[in-house]
Amino acid sequence: MIAAGLRALPLESADDLDALIAHIAEGAAERDRDRVMPFDLFDRIRASRLGALRLPKAEGGRGASFRELLEVVIRLAAADPNVAHALRNHFTFVERHARAKNAPNREKWAALVASGALFGLANTELASPAIGGGAFQTTLTPDGDGWRLDGVKYYSTGTIFADHVLVRAAGPEGRNASAIVPTDREGVETVDDWDGAGQRLTGSGTTHLRNVRVEPDEAIFDTPTVGYGYAYHNTLAQLIVTGVVAGVLRNVRDDAVALLKSRKDRHFYYASAGSAAEDPLLQQIVGEISAASFAADATVLAAADALEAVAEVRDRGLPGAEVAHRAAEAAAKAKLVVDELTLKNASRLFDVGGASATKRAKNLDRHWRNARTLASHNPSALKARALGAYELTGEPLPALGFF
Image 1 (cartoon, rainbow, N blue to C red):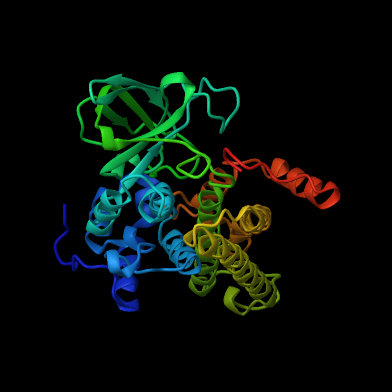
Image 2: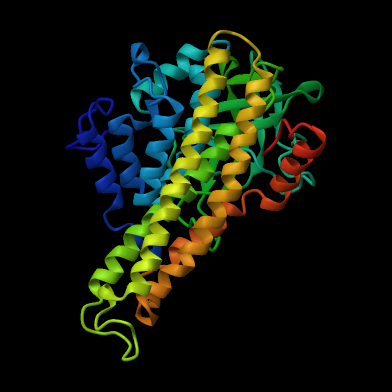
């Protein structure tokens, strides 16, 4: 569905992107507070073809680098982290299936992405004891020249807004596969039942798959060079989550400035200045939050540059295991730094605003809730241990799953 009033073209200028992000930012706090799902915003995103940023220009995209992509992710997250996070699985789909030169049926997926179509993901199963492991209860069974898909998935981030969903499943003889099907196909049901403390509007609910027909060109089996089979395939997904956290911190900075400017008449009688905006202690807090936001952005973009090196190698058809490891290392380090900076400063926001900043109507607690929820996607302690073991012994970082 193409939304009226927005050109159905790739975002051609900074003004186009600015307008889209400004529109997404409008009412974001209220949507989060009142749990209003942003379906209309995803219609605007389809119309803008934002999801085609990483496609080559010759294929209808923008040919954006990873640095440019992560810059957009941070800006989107500063406007509304729910929207930015709900697009994470789409952008990783583009890399695996619409950009990778060896991806089966790449031209089909690239054409859909270029048209504005959005892709979600249904991967996680609660019965799996190894989170991020590949033992699926969802099955892909032969059906004539195609397949049938059955199972239940949880935490299907973005799928409720998507046109297609990539479902991870176990195929014959234990071979793992991805089935990519339209979300309106018979037997596919998406349920908005995510009840987390934060990121409430990401559509991270349950996906039911009941005897879903999968056409022959919609099933892609993993190999060491295709789909989810290659080493460090999940680095981009991890870095996008960290980019969203950095965007939350940028929003914290903006709200800290706005809060302090708005406190014109009331201040504690024993404070260092007559007004809050002139108080050097509060000015210091705002300055430190601003510096932390700068550091978070820079850290994410440095890790994005490491991913760019991987893309350059893989685009030439080379394996690139060493550069992929370096990119995974950079993304893991970025997570540790950015999560800590954001969680700390999302709390310090209330030192700037005082008790009135805790009013439910302001919904400023959403920043900490969103950051805490995002940071919990992968435990920092496990990332730190893996990095420490690598530094001390040379033990490689985990190559598959959610690392």
